[in-house]
Image (tube, rainbow, N blue to C red; front, side):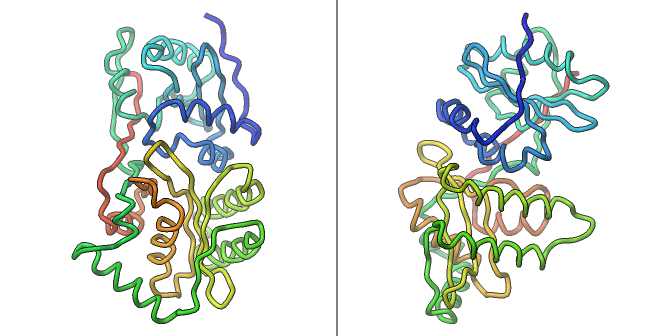
Length: 301
């Protein structure tokens, strides 16, 4: 079996990834080119296409990891064999595992005849999925608190307006981004500074990434912004949401406005994972997800 010719990820690879990701109904927000590109300096992705299979690997000093292959189901078992051979040839002294695996591929691993896997659900990586009309309407008792915050925001800031993100307001979004990180960064959390740089990089290529974005302006200045994209035929995924937390109700307002203005034709909205952060988990659960998208890791038994 020949080696897979792995290459590093660049901005010019988007078309190839979009073709593979768009060829199937994928609910896992990890499988967007935007996410791979934003976090590439942390996960160090390597990829290749061979025999109509997209292979993705990631690595750090301790782990050489494979993502599930993006292909038709009949090709998955052979792809597993090829991935295991590649892992043996490339991992060196590092451990090997499969990461961010969907349930359908976890089942493929469980049925793989040539090796056994320990498969574990990674709850901190589960994506939160909501009904779009719930996020737009905030109707009923379960959204009473959210609706109160939104009404308070509208009453206190009657001049607030929603605008789609365009080249004209990206500089103001950058200013709000930098302000948010000034208020939230900590010396013991290098991830925060990396995320800041990653979002600036997305703004550098905003049109090329074909993202939809929205901002709320108060007094003509951006107080909140967000962006996302279509994940599959009926789901939008929200990648980033930042706002001035001193403005009461601003997060409810940008969430509601973005979905109402850009994603009202979608059934579901995926707001990605909580990374095991208590405050983030509480915030995501407070919007009453309709389902969680399970993700698994798998190691050789």
